[in-house]
Image 1 (cartoon, rainbow, N blue to C red):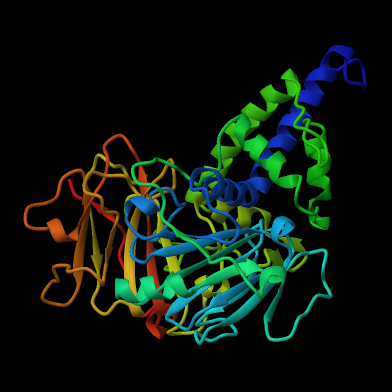
Image 2 (image 1 turned 30 degrees about the vertical axis):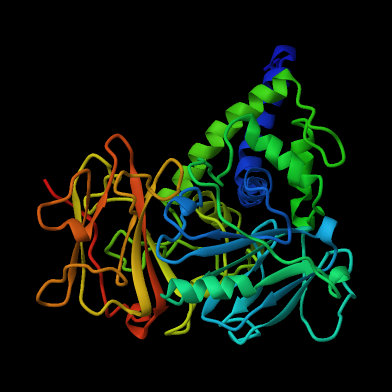
Length: 449
């Protein structure tokens, strides 16, 4: 200080600190937008898909790059650019499906399938760009979109692979303008043997991806202060990415620090009532109360950042409060003693008899660094009620996690990787009343010494 004022020499340091603090918060703010844009970039540039194509993530290798992907059921995904397509039609066939539409910020815009307006009987949806609010053609389920880039995805829940393949080939996506003679929708598989990750980039690439997607999207009223902060860092709508050397150093540092904050915010959640069972280490994965990301008097900034650092896509069906429909997700990042789950150690988990799931349950192991399916030599990341697991006499199931399978327990084992940490999701498809009233209770993951 120079008396009661900052010294002349300290002024650049204060501005650097101000920009760094704002940049770390912009990192957290941008997580859902950047991960959505990155996956869209992968589908367009790596898989050579268009807005009117579907990517069919069917095999284990297909799903390795998806943020906390489910290894039990296939994913069918499309990213739709309404700036190129204009109003866009999705024809959904009848079938046992769960899916929906999300905007570029991963806010749910519509549910499709069994919990949507078509009730699993199929129908035509039309995605309306944000600039065409009064466009409402007859005969469609109208979806007013809040962003230009839209996510469409669903899971086929029928256990028969042939039924799934037939259903996927019946889905059609095309511009409304081409409805009289639409181009057939292609179904594309990710290229075999090609590594890819649909996760947020690191370093300066994070900001370049954020800048690119901001050019095409309308600025939400809630985000105008963040846009002002980004302007101080060389990132503006309608202008090239123009960070100078000072700003680039700050952005790179902020991406690193912001990611560390995101890890703490996701893997050591400090939200109230985040534990399903107060005395156990199973967190609610989704702590947002509504897909709109809005709560009373505020928007769920930290709740949103927590989920979208470690996962992608969000639907009301994933936080169902109605027994026997939708899904429920619990996450565990620590063992029973409070230590991070370590890929070089051996663990066990007991699943008591009669898990509270009408359809099926699954537990999936993820690499903590990528938040994607663990890429092990076993080529398996999940154990579920759809697999031939060895059960105990009382109907419970003991699961095992570690570098080597315990003798005779190979069917109940997922291989972890020494030198890498991991975490897991427990999913209940069609959670029953026993889940909601907590009369069914699962223990923590325990290290086997």
